[in-house]
Amino acid sequence: MILAAAQTKPTRGNIEANLLDHYRLIELAVKNGAQLIAFSELSISGYERENAQKLAFKKDDARLDHLKKLAVKNNIVIIAGAPIQIEHQLFIGEFVISPNNSVAIYTKQFLHEGEDDFFQSSFDYNPMLEIENQKISFAICADIDNPLHPENACKRETDIYIASIFFSPNGIPNAYRDLQSYAQKHKMNVLMSNFSGESWGYPSGGKSAFWNNKGELIAQMNDSDSGLLLVEKNNDNWISRIVKI
Image (tube, rainbow, N blue to C red):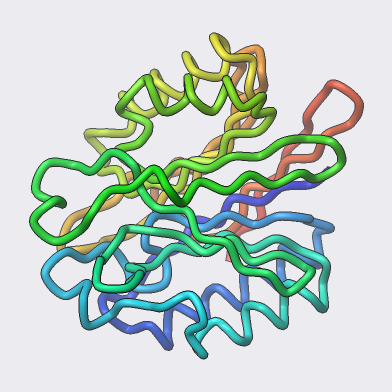
């Protein structure tokens, strides 16, 4: 099994440019044999609050069509974030696009302070995947600040916990501390994708990373590069490599 965390520098509000970045990184992940690629929080739009409504996607949004084609053609799962409108409510969400042409939605369960002025939270959209008998579940940013979130993932027998975040440089030490703790305590492998560069007018801390289910840090990117963190499971061991763009 090969998994990829994508570390990107989003262009604020420019969905077309951000999608082109997604396409390039997906193709690069495919060349490196990845079966899944995870992008950061709100990766397609960049992190937004005030402008999220006008950037919002729907589940059957035509702007997802090429991502769906890439998933089917290359037998890869794509996890890409966007503001998602469901009926009359707006969520911080991500699309889980599978090779069978299906699209599932995960919505952020625990909002950061101030986000509830613009978004709803929900526990109703919480899909799981399975690749090579490994159960995979998802988290978005402030979800990882609440220990209940990984605890609930553990109760669902999660093997791989994928966190798509937007953390500043100051927040990264806390993210590393918590994710390492969850990996060790709940015996889950943890893959984390963060932006590099700026989003919403704030710097992001990069350092996308992977911990094995013993809580050992297997690999991390730096705070400034764009590219992929790739991890490959060989029996009970994981090996890693970083591909910069």
